[in-house]
Length: 401
Picture 1 (tube, one colour):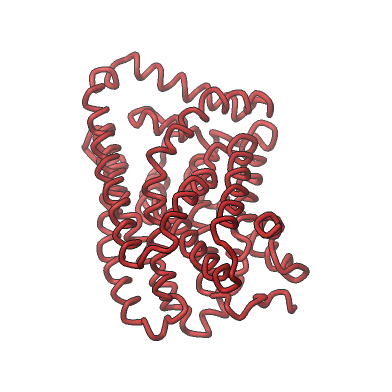
Picture 2: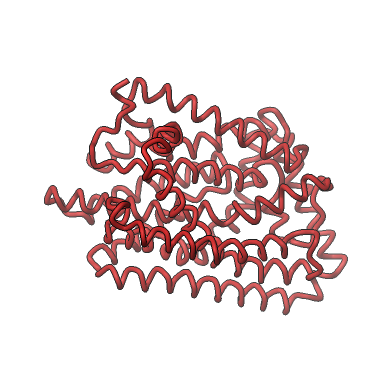
């Protein structure tokens, strides 16, 4: 049982617990993209989905949009920035030049992300993290206040810029988007994706992804990197202030952050969920542009409220022990993230169980919970024999050579 204990007394269990919860949230948010042509539906917000939603599914979708979508990728990004600071300080303590090791660390992530993006699933975030991580090098020795100002500014500017850009593009193209030609093109793209993903061979799926999805995803990197870098920097700031190492001494800060994050994030995220629901009377294109802008602010705020809540809860030893299986999942977050994609690809795509386009929102939530529960069990048994996840071990070996 010794391998279940962190190898170093410096390991912060609360961070592993938060990382473990982030993996559950990411799986719930990603389920729409695994089980249906959500990428194509995003390109045409007014298009009809493959499956009509029941009343229960509408409520599930509303809750996911309100409490999950846009909250857990920011949490993962925040933790990545915090982890980068911990990595940096350990290198400094050993007298090693951080730039070399950071470049190795992010090059591994970039390569793994591109493999994931091309061969497993088009929703990869790791290649974007790597791109933002290279920019993080410019802030390693910056004062904490400078890091915080840059982080908040990048997120705010990204929200304003993307909202304005989407609103302008929709306004200019309003006549086309409301035309029969646009509706026909939307349904053709959706039907094409449904056909390839549900019954196509693996090679057909790769060809479709290369020609139809990768250009869109890779071009979006210029718009997503600034906000992700901003979240990295906020995590980096928390690391510089040692807020996770002194939770008892900084409990007042965490309570204020909890109140601010939940108090502002919940209503903003509710507005985003409402705009993207069937209850909204706003035009689909308007709701998409304004809603995304709102969630760019509301999502990170609610994420910080979640983080503060977990930190305050796990100050109590009883809750820390209770949540320890979640911490183990978080200790091998990279492996579990890739594993989620592999399992979902087998469940939904044509070379597996062929469930693509046939699963409702509520059933998708159930599948996500079953997958995550299985990961909790498998991870527990993995750490009975090993001290690291397989990809974490490979990442460490690559970084330190």
